Length: 97
Image 1 (cartoon, one colour):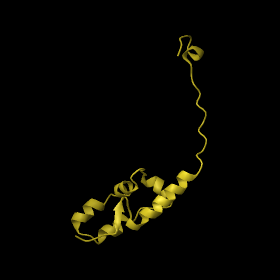
Image 2 (spheres, rainbow, N blue to C red):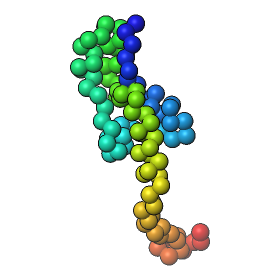
Image 3 (cartoon, one colour):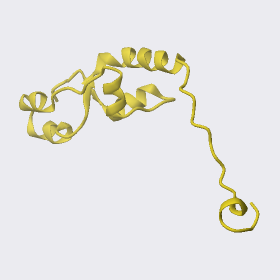
Image 4 (tube, helix red, strand yellow):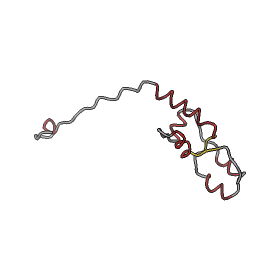
């Protein structure tokens, strides 16, 4: 079997252990998936089927992904919008919560 130095999104999440990310979040952090078509062109058909639709990343990007996530988590969170409680007796003609 041809050895590739790539991992898929599921393997990225497995290596993070306590967190998970999706492809959009990785892109926001500056990690873009590799070009599957270019990778698959040089592979045997059985490997192509496994990788054709996967989000693929360089295997050596995991430490940088961890650093980027740690930096993002260290930033203060944006304030959440204030929750407005709707009381049944205030708006719907009677009753209590």
